[in-house]
Structures are given as structure tokens and as C-alpha cells.
Amino acid sequence: MDSLITAAGRALAAGDPLGALNRVALRNDPPALALRGIAMAQLGDFPRAKTLLQSAARGFGPKQAVARARCVVAEAEVALASRDLAWPTHKLDAARETLQLHGDLMNAEHARYLMVRRLLLVGHLDDAERELAKLDPALFPPALMAAHALMVAGIAMRRVHAGVAREALAKATVNARQAAIPALTAEVEAASRLLGLPAARLVSRDRERALLLGDVEALFASDSLVIDACRHVVRRMDKAVSLATRPVLFTLVRALAEAWPGDMPRNTLIARAFRAKHADETHRARLRVEIGRLRAMLGSLAEVNATTRGFVLSPHDASEVVVLARPVEGKHGAVLALLADGESWSSSALALALGASQRTVQRSLDELTTSGMVHSFGSGRARRWMTPPLPGFTTTLLLPSPLPGD
Image 1: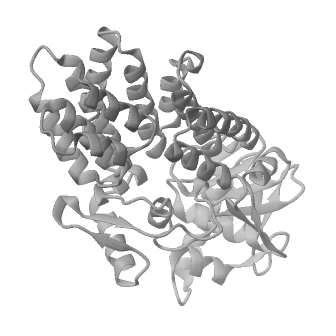
Image 2 (image 1 turned 45 degrees about the horizontal axis):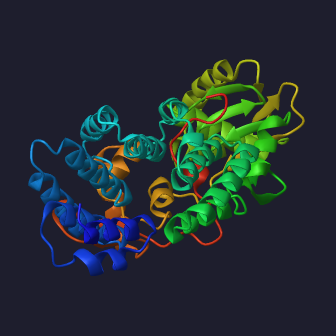
């Protein structure tokens, strides 16, 4: 490897893409193409970066398996940064195995971190934890140690373990400073700020207030009956009943919780659960059926008792009943939650992360674009959507992943 390639590589490792381009911008040999691709990725030009990395991979010969594998890992990182979650992950697995086989352990472990980050984005926390457990960060340089701590913090925040997240972010901060890479330091600082932003809203009959992640953790540990509208779960301490596949039942229990300790009129319940403007006898009969199903689902957590004008929620062994709601709710709340990270997303990536059909996501994006809440650029498969982060809110609890007790 010549001196210019070496110098460009060192510049990239230090987070200086312009310095790297100054050395290899006019060269078209495979190593230079690969470094130019990484530099363009650091500068945010992901389409150009992808093209350069693919050209570099094709340029390396059959005896240069390690170089080709490194290009694949870099391409995977570009796909992740551009939220192309449909990028074929089997290519990353094959590249990691090649790097490990040839003794390039640092890049092999970096590939594993990319796997963990993708799993975290799509909400597969158990799989992300299993992959992360295979790594020993003590063996790595500061940059990879910071990446490891960020992954630990990300999983902890999604599981609402604020203390674990805070400790991991403190380690990430120290390691990022040692690595002296500005982009990495900025990523750690952005993650740390989330702990100081509201993660959800507490809604009850008398009040509504914002909760930090630590407050949500404390709420889950209390003896309150929590109607978790972030995950459509009814929970109390270590007991939880999921109503994620029973939207009518969850609508009913949330309405009852918002009226607690009072009751909720039948006509109001019918309007909210069945979206009926005028209740008739068929609606009342259906309400009785759904209330019976709700009683059966809640089991030992609470009872639903009839009153003169409606129904009342009566919790077992709970000091109060509260609703934990998303910071921003509405028809397109889940899509906005993902777009609020400030990155550009494809519709296919949003569909993967939300577990919804791509057509459903596209309809939401069309409506959000028409209302001016979301902006798009590009066309065809290269089209991406983005929106500025919601001011003053973190979207951690809005993303699709299981919470404690699920």
C-alpha cells in the first residue's frame, strides 16, 4: 500500500474526510475508490459513496478477499446510515466471516456492530443483545468501545432501563473523547441528550405531564396500574397483558382508565371504540360483548364493573390507574416517530421498522407530505423522506420493540 493510501486511511480513521479526498480524489484504483467512498459517506453523500464502494469491490481481484469484504462492510454501513434497511444482510454476514477467517478481527467486529445497530433500528432487541454478548469491548480501540457502549445504551433505553443507559453513555463519552473522532463524539452527545428529554406523557383524569425515561422506569416499578398506550399493554409491576392485537379492547380500557376513579358513559365508550356517532341497541349489545372479553383478558389485574350510566375500571392492589401515552399521538404518530431522528428514510425501511406493509406506509407519507410535516427528495427507489426532530421530545418509546413484561 502506497503512502497516499496510508495517509488517506489515517485521515478517515481520524474523521477527516476532506483530508482523505485531498490525497486520493484523482485516483481510480480500487483502494482509492474504496477510500473515496468512505469519505463521501462521512460527508453525507450516500448514493455516491455506495457507487464508489461497489466499484472498488469489483476492482479487487479474487486473491483480495479481505479488501472486497471491507468494501462490503463499508457499503453496509452506508446502507444503515441512509436507512436502507432492506439491504441484504447475508452479504454482511459473509464479509464478517471472511474478515474473521483472515485475521482482520477489528473490521469483523465492526461488521457485528453494524448488525446490532440494524437489529436495534427494527426493534429486535433480543437478537441485538445476543449479538452484542459475543463481543468483548475491552479488546478493541476506543472508537469500537464507544460503539459498543452506544449499543448497550440504545438497548437499555428501549427497554426503559435508564440507569443502565446512563452508565453506558458515560463510558461512551470517555471512549469517544479518547478516539478524538468528531462525528463519534457528536453521536454520543446526541444519545446522551435523550435522557434529559420527555419520553412519554402521563395521562390521568386530573392531570397530564411529561415523563423522562427514568420517570417511566419508576412508574413501571410502582404499584400503579399502567395502561401503556406506547405498546398497547396493561401492566402492573411484573405482570402485563398485551392487547396489541385487540385494538377495540385497548381503546375501551384506555377510555376507562382516563375516567378513573369515575365511570365512563356507555355512549362515550361506543363512540370511541366503534366510531359510531349515534349508538343504537346493536352497538350496546356489542359493547357488552367486548366488555366481557376485556374482563377475561385483564384477569387478576383489574375488574370492569357496570354502573348506572356506564362502566368503571376497578384495579386489584393498585394505588392508582394512569395512562402512559406517546409524546405525540395521531394517525401517523409511528411514522413520525421514526422520521424524528433527523435521518432520511426509504418507505421500505419504514415498513420494516414498523412491521407494516409498504403501501400503508406510503399512504401515510403521502398525507404527511401534503400537510407539510414531511419532505421527500429523490425519485423511484432512491426516494427518501425526512423531517426535523420533534423539538423537546425523544421518540424512544414510540419505536416498535417489547418493553419489560411483554
